[in-house]
Image (cartoon, rainbow, N blue to C red; front, side, top):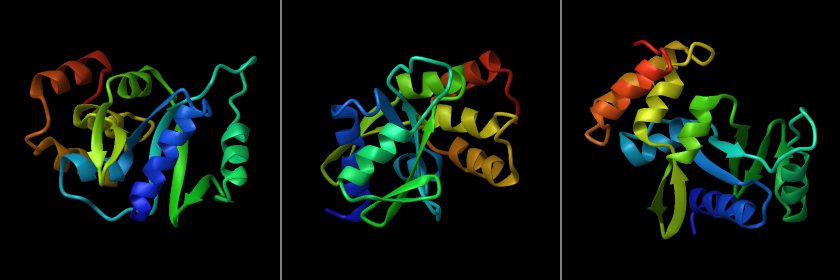
Length: 163
């Protein structure tokens, strides 16, 4: 199993163990499934965490799970088979919808939940995340035949997002 597949398998183990309720690969690594891959440092993963008793979100259970399995923590990442994995709790309704509508695909025999390309574009165009690099990724992705134009148009309108 290659290192990316091993990192994806760890995500499935986290979900099966209840460490996360669900996840969806996002960011540049998700582009592997929809368009030309681009170089990136880490694997970004949107997650729903188990319900917390209060308003504070804690990734402590994720880091404890990783430590029990011998995965190192480096800054905000856990490192699985050499792949830095950053778990990003869903931060708004768009991210929630991106996880809810994620597609289960296959990578080297490992099932993986991946944010749909229309949602990746929308996430790249959010004002809080908008950078030149993300705008370029959105434009690259928009050319992919995997993008459903009607779904993208609807998302951009519902979330007041613009190119």
